[in-house]
Length: 341
Image (cartoon, rainbow, N blue to C red; front, side, top):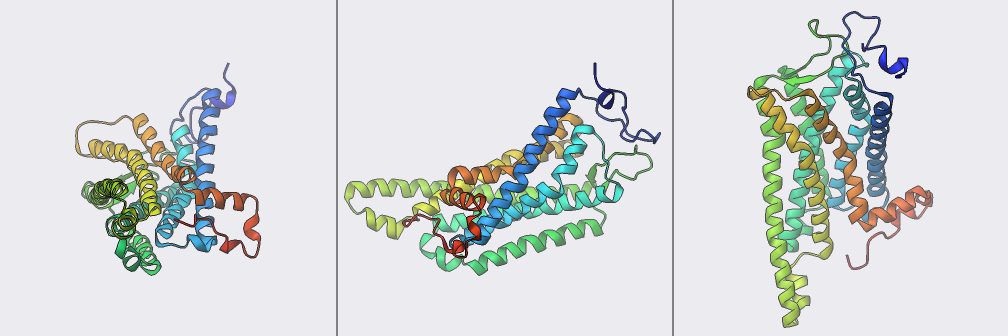
């Protein structure tokens, strides 16, 4: 028999006759969902916090590429701390308990951070493209100030873009609408702005990212053939120094390529369903949107796992952080990278 807490009360706000209906689940399902959600949120918050501390603290990691990774980690950290806990409760209970104003603010933050994430990924793709396709000029073209300017551009352009949409009332939320039950919180774009947002924050960035990484893949494959040929002709050193990017650059391109692929895998289904639901007669079930929204938020915790699997420097920095060795006076100059990187 189900407990009173789970079965008897079917409303988000029992004392309000206009309350939305709460999702009814068994205690076992509730426990399972909240455990999974808590792990996801913790991974997103603390995993990305480890990336932020690593890149910020260790001077050897203050490279243009890692600064872009830092910006992406900050974005994912903010998603984990300001969006995920509240949205996951909404998905599980089908209730918004946090008021109308915070509902609106939550969607504003959501749209802004989505735009920042896409901008960061575009700049990361550009960085890896230059590193792999034009390695001789990479250090001259891509400097720390250039990376800092790119990050500043990402954040301020995204904030400005979100402000423009708010100014022109390009999106609205259902919370506070008299015709909607109390405890509802969904965000919708006006028809014109929905299409604009899809093009600006998804279609154009994805086209750029996929195009650049396609070129990176082709060039990396070509370099590999050259190196194999060089081994046969015994002038490998010339090829590696003059023609091909460093091994570390190729590995970074691969690692960040995986991160970008995971990002697209998590986001593309959501955007496709959103466009289909908004601009066709096909109605996407709420359960599908809930699953896809969950998938989108899960992405925020994926990058630290990818870095842990493919970046030795991240593995070393995490050990130093969790053992509190970063509080040693000279810890910031510890070498985390291989000598021949």
